[in-house]
Image 1 (cartoon, rainbow, N blue to C red):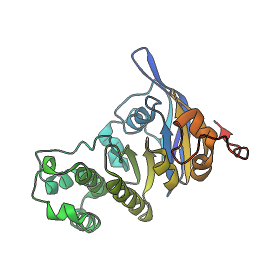
Image 2: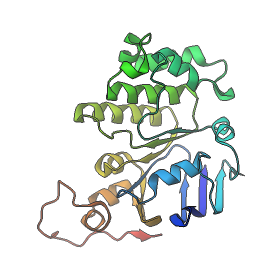
Image 3: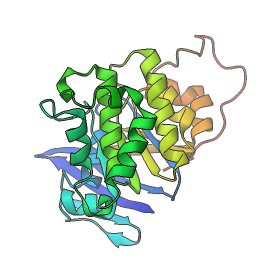
Image 4: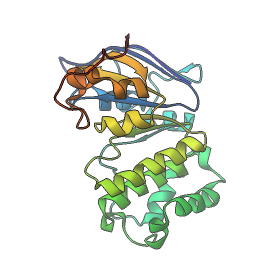
Length: 253
């Protein structure tokens, strides 16, 4: 579905992505994890047309999307839920959802999709006439998800959806992501909460300083102490003692 090849991006003279390559197949949930500054959010911004790459190829459904505007990429079916939710605080919940249905892919499906959103997030239905800025952080994240659903995504890119949320709300976020996957939406998930991301993902990529350094199944990355020690920080569920057995071999990218 999505193929990224040798992608380079810089902000001024500062390299941000240094030749990354990745692939996502239809129906997959792929996690992109790494420390702050690794280049995860920049990757999503390039894929959604918000940042122009210096070089490299991006193909979606067999066609190049390099050079397309953000609006054109949305029309192709790639929807980006950015870090920080970015809802419209002065618009009501209902109006925020209507913004998500602006593109051609959503035309004629607005009512049915809105009902699906309200069924998945009943709190949004209760607050549908209230401004988005009056919602809690967790409710705003649900609204961002709902707005994405309205756009009828083929590929949904989520940037730090659990950031700053209470653990009980993080569980709700995870359920919402699983709902997207069950409905056939392909997902690229960026998360600093690597336990959450890799626990849900079929496959994962680990980024460090603008490069993809490891790729494997989500389960293998999650269970490998070397990944945590080298790239993600110490896993809170792993003791300070060395592992009893060698870590499984990972594929280098």
